[in-house]
Length: 98
Image (tube, rainbow, N blue to C red; front, side):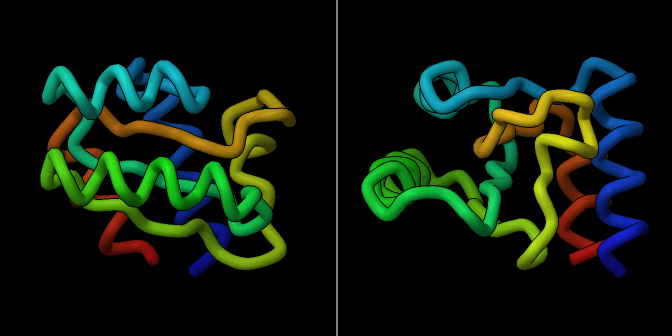
């Protein structure tokens, strides 16, 4: 399951269907472009609360990536803890693989 999720996340990145970084993702949530938010399992509590609150307010689904897997590595950027999926089909596929 983890490998499929990470492979699909990498595919979404190569297709240009992702936005990364806390501020960029929150901007996308506010504008309605982000369809799904994926957060790393190691994200800080403060950042997690901020993202949860925005997602709840703007009715965007948020999921946590598999534990002990750094989602930033799947997209080739180690320091990314928050990823926004801007394509509906990739969002559905990622939810199915969790």
